[in-house]
Length: 66
Image (cartoon, rainbow, N blue to C red; front, side, top):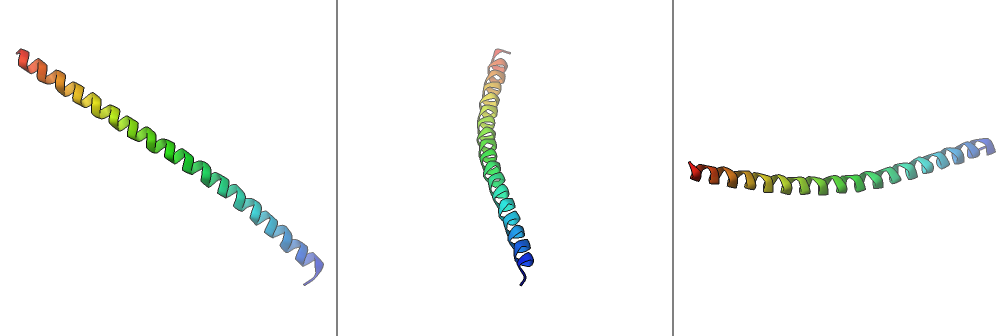
């Protein structure tokens, strides 16, 4: 192999490593965001459940007042 070919390969390897690190960081960020969204979803599901129970309780009380 000639020096220019080796230099080109080294440059390409450096580019690939840089891209790999970028993707790795993006992956970490996406995992953090996914964890946040999962936690938000759980919180919203619980809030929805409590609201549903409260509404059902109100409806039951209204029916007993009839």
